[in-house]
Amino acid sequence: MAFIINGEEIDEEIIEAEFRQIKGHYERTLQVACCERDPEFRQTAKDNILARALLNQEATKRYAIISEEEVTARLSKLIESAGGEEQFFAKIGMPYRDDALVRDNVRNGVRLDKMLGTVYGDETTPSEAEMLAFYEANIASFMSEEMINASHITKGLEGATSRNDVYTKMRELRGELIAGADFATMAEAQRGNEQQQIELGFFKRGEFMEEFETIAFSMEVGELSPVFTTQLGFHICKLLDRKPSAPLPFEEIKEAVAARMTEDRRDKAFNAFVDWLKTEANIEDSEAASE
Image (cartoon, rainbow, N blue to C red; front, side):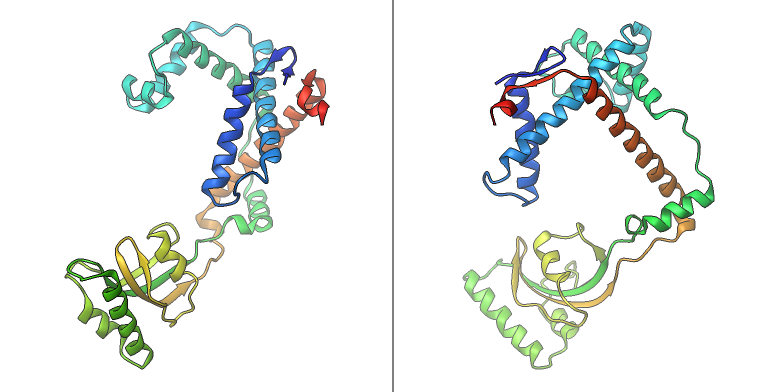
């Protein structure tokens, strides 16, 4: 299989590595199983590699010479932001230190930044009226996160004869709650130690264990959960209150709106530039031609 971009042949292993990274992301987020989307992921991998290759080629054409002073200045900033040389080389994952290769990669980064600066052009701060219009047109992007407040009864396995004994006890407690027992009183009586929280306060997704959040966020206010497990043991949860997602006040997030406007404008300019590079490029893909 040959994938050649303006005479630059792309090694098959580079495509495979990009493909595995993309597929791995979707597998980790449970959006794919096995192989049904492999052709899509492989094409995305090739599209990503094509865009990077065209950008690097054009940057080299426009800015063939980058001074050693520019490279040193950029490298110094990267090392400083990483917390020192040792942390920098650990971060980039280089198996052995190769200063010449590092400087060459940094030089390419300087070239790319110079070119993107011309692509993005002059950037002015949007007016308040422009920001407000953008905010209102994209209100879904400026929402607070949903939050809930819950109480729970927890029993771990310490000192228990078996998991089934703990589960059976929790089922009995839940039956008493359904029959009208007070949740807070029971939770206090069943608390394992003084450090164990009963009422958790308001929290958003990502702040607690996923198993607990999956149950709690699916409940209605006042609802009692079934008995369920996490790594901490068995739980019964009661949802006390919910703060739904709502628009964040414009006055409080003007800077975020301006940043999003800049990001959107850059994305449009970048994508248009890459599309233009593709129209000017000589691309050979024997795999695509054989399909």
